[in-house]
Amino acid sequence: MAVVKVTRPKLNSGEKMYLGAIMKGFVITMKHAIASLRGKTRGASDLASSGLGATMQYPEQKWDEHLPEYYRGAPALVTDEQDRERCVSCQLCEFICPPKAIKITPGEIPSDDPWAKVEKRPKEFEIDMIRCIYCGMCEEVCPEQAIYLRKDYAITGLSRADMVHDKKKLYEIGGKRVGLVNKWNELK
Image (cartoon, rainbow, N blue to C red; front, side, top):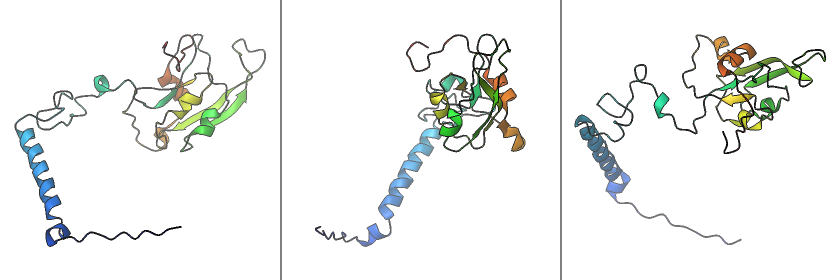
């Protein structure tokens, strides 16, 4: 294998002290500061900002109308039209979750149950929202379309235990999905 020797260019004293780069950064910062003071900040009108800068004033103003269509929020479980659990405890979402935020304990459904459509349902289903990275892989892998990413970005809790959503809470915030949703098709 051939070895190629590369020589470093010689720097003059101004380049060694980064004076050019520091001055260039200072000029850009001053341009943005002056534009902000004059009320001509780029993007300020789109975000309905307060006037100085393009910062949205969060508690008073929300991102809800500015969220893009492809936004991925927090995961939640959904039920079908008859309030049956769509989740069949296949555990694919648990296995594919990169940070291992999902924990499922499968349970069997008695055969005489009138709502039984499969053999299993989750006895326990937990998602640790602190560990969740909102990647959407759980939604993509679910064969029963039981887990969806909702457009929610304000998830809070007073303790770590509050941030672990159990099955009851996940169904409460997920709601009901009517019919086959066809999430991978153009017909949504």
